Amino acid sequence: MLSHIWNDQTVDIAFMQAAAPISGTGKEKPGFIWLGGFRSDMEGTKALAMVDEAARIGCASLRFDYSGHGLSGGKFVDGTISRWVDESLAVLLACTEGPQILVGSSMGGWIALRLAQELKKREEQSRLAGLLLIAPAPDFATRLMEPAFSVEQRKELQDKGYIEEPSAYSDEPNIITRALIEDGRDNQVLSGDLAVGVPVRILQGMKDPDVPYAHALELVEVLAHDDVQMTLIKDGDHRLSREEDIKLLKRTIAQMT
Image 1: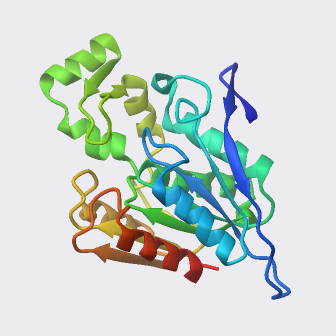
Image 2: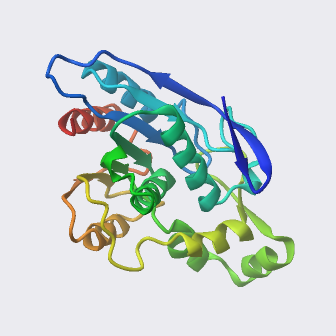
């Protein structure tokens, strides 16, 4: 556990590291860090696939749960992009050494892009070796969620501070807070020229009902100055957790080292 302070609140962040021997190349290989999606946790199929493949190719890896997710403390409804970015940065700096490849799924793709910005701001660009984004959802709060709200939902969000929506992935509803939406505006990355300075690889399903592949194409356009390659999976959904999707994920991980 890593104890992290956010706005005078101390929250325990659960993480798991996997170390592997470095192959005899005379050169240190990058590690891999898992950044999960909205309401997901570090025990998912893709997270475990990252750990397995990193070990196979001789790289260390790390996965963790944001506050309000999985094994970590805190309440989900207290979470914002700023908070989860801050926690992710704390984990990266405290628990890893050397360059890292950020593997971000859905919301984790947004957090990975924000981490790249924060590392650059701190002049810690050397800690970043690449981004592997799976169905990335940058700016989803304002670009995907907010435009779909009904008049009644907007009023409820303003009056109660949150709304509940059915989830396609859980029996429990998604709780979307006004704080999440408002904070999302402060963390937008698609609003202008974005440069991360490292290779970016994107895996995106064309039948994704949650994040349209046009959204990922917009990200490619915004990353105009970077080495970006996107793989479109014609029949792929948002999870990209089928056997063939996991094989593609592992191949991409291996190609990035």
